Length: 127
Picture 1 (cartoon, rainbow, N blue to C red):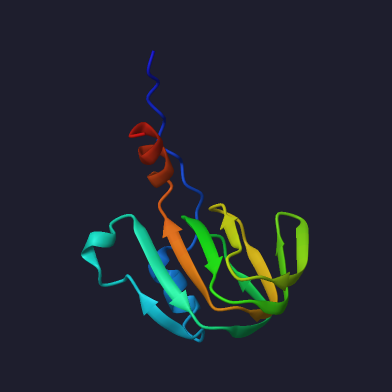
Picture 2: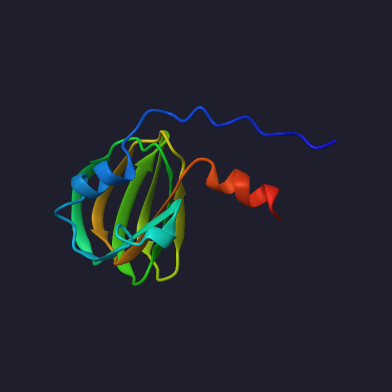
């Protein structure tokens, strides 16, 4: 029996366009904002920058980041937990939609990918 997944309700939160505006001061090196083929995957590449108490508002999409370089110290607070220490090249973080996140330290150069809530469900259906 095949079950049809219900459409995720989607928590209120910032859209990808709003996030790009919020992160306007970060050194964006590349963006998929003009790539029509990107579809439900939006990506931005950032250089390293200092975050001092930076709060990312809840998002209406899933965020996946992968570091391109290392940093000596980064602190991330989300969901009542805090993680801090060095950030190494190749590490990835998944931030669920609807979660505010606070950052401190030097954020290393990274690739930030935004997925709609439906993307993982559609991918699973097609595997």
